[in-house]
Image (cartoon, rainbow, N blue to C red; front, side, top):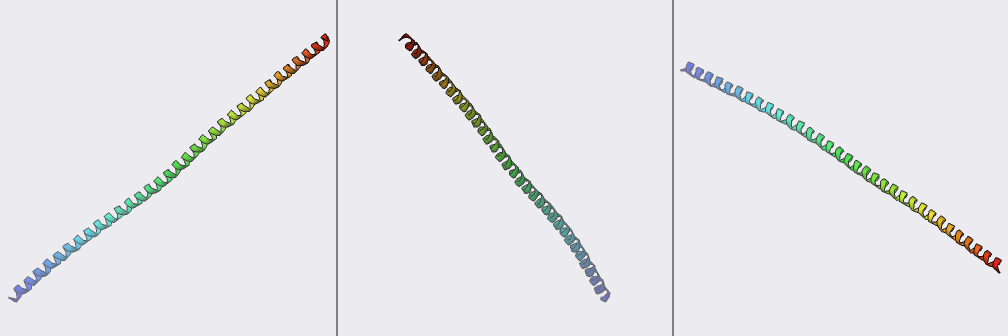
Amino acid sequence: AQDEQVARAQREYEAAQAEVTAKIAEEQAAAEAYNTTRKKKEASQQTAEEATRTLHETRKKVAMLEVYALNQRKMQELEEKRKAATAAAEAAKRSLMEQRQREKEALDATRKALEEARQRA
């Protein structure tokens, strides 16, 4: 009977040892799965952070290009206004010169008419 009790205890011990070994293997597999998932999560976070940085840099570049384009348009408008002002100034100068010429011609015609009137008298 004692041999049977020892054999039963031995079997129970071996069964418990097998169960412990299985649970240890299961726990190790779970730990490996956790580590793998954690590493994937970290990689995903790094990818997301990099994408965010890239997005911010791209937005900065777009804003800078918009400012550059706006400055270019303003410079073009100012250049067009300068050209228009120069053309207006030249037209005013020509108009003034033409007016002076007409006044001179009118004055010359008046002098000539006065001279002719004096000679007749």
